[in-house]
Length: 462
Image (cartoon, rainbow, N blue to C red):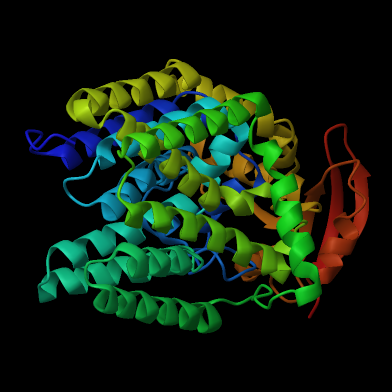
């Protein structure tokens, strides 16, 4: 980065905020699903410190978005915040690794460009909106930068707050932060102490602040090798063009060889940190029993892939070190162009239409029936609940519709009254409605078939 660029973070912040808004009003939200819509309901129906039904994902963004009561506006606001943080993640990581004078601007922009060109749209939505990794990485490494660059007490306190928030959002980020601190940190003992303390506080919050706990133990050592292998085997699902990834890997290897022969390799400490973070994250994830129970799906490798993207971009920056200013400008332009072309022209009307088309098929029937609860399969219930409440807000009604499904324990007390009768709507082809209701203390009996929904008469246990 050229020293003549006086306010690089202002440039990055403005471009990030603008592109996040552009993408959010483009086609980004076409991949919304039950898990991602649940954060809107957490924000608008009942906020909890962690994602409903577990203790792994701190609900910072739903907390910030709570004043926005309109479900669609809340969804867009949360999406904008999450996307902004995910786009900032490679910048703050590169800035910590390479220092103030390093080519972090080029590295961050190149990383985002590679991601937008290579990852499938569904994976992009997952990283940018649905998963907590980008937000936790941005908060965590911003804290490390602050603590390393400004050795004063106020900066240390602010850094500690950011680190605690990062670990609350995703406690797994602590491993990345500690590895980077030990490898390249200018004040490793101080920074490591902050990381450890923040991780401990987040662990205590997860233990005592969550009503449900996910499996945190390791798989047996005999399962580790198979877990590491399956994580790697599942990686092709990230891209629709494996050949492009192979080409990028081959090109990077050739570039590294050329840089080595010419004596122009990047500093060894950032490169060592990249390798250590990527390998350790992969190894630890592969040892997790929880990840194994979820069949080692590739979303658990997103942080590793971002780290690898930063490593590839570090090589690109080294190739053009003699033209650092021009390369930084070109990288930023390429990033903006990739985002604009990928997500199309912004249109709030199109976003609303897409949401209605995907989730609104049963809304009119649910509201017309007078049902106050939608029950049954997780992946059907929560989109239907979200859209029913969106329709109610559009008509300025004060009523609400609740879910009766996996993860509904947090909102059950809002509508359950001992001995009361309720009307439950369910999908006609969903045989799980009565069973799920029974698990939540509601006796449900089929009352009538309608073309779009089945209605159940429910009685809440005393």
